[in-house]
Length: 118
Image 1 (spheres, helix red, strand yellow):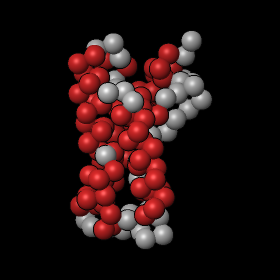
Image 2 (tube, helix red, strand yellow; image 1 turned 45 degrees about the horizontal axis):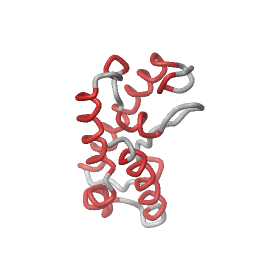
Image 3 (tube, helix red, strand yellow; image 1 turned 120 degrees about the vertical axis):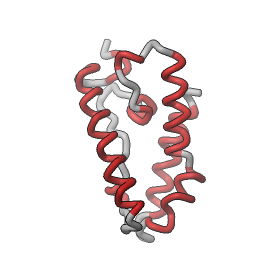
């Protein structure tokens, strides 16, 4: 069994979470400078074989996987981050028109995966 982490186990997951957190920092910095954002700028969760989109999106530290309180808190944070309306409010004006629909479609996919965890 690979557990909830997919290929590479908890160690691989932890590395991806660090990369994901860094990618969000870069994305938010671009947004705060009002730079144009494309589909590839969005720090999409990377799902590996056997992995789970919601687990990738909540960036749950492996040591907290059985801590329901911590998990709930991170799910709520991720839902705020990926909520289509909130995402649209925060970033739509900066999204390149060519990518806007595709970005919002994918945001919905992530949001729905997270909602399933609630």
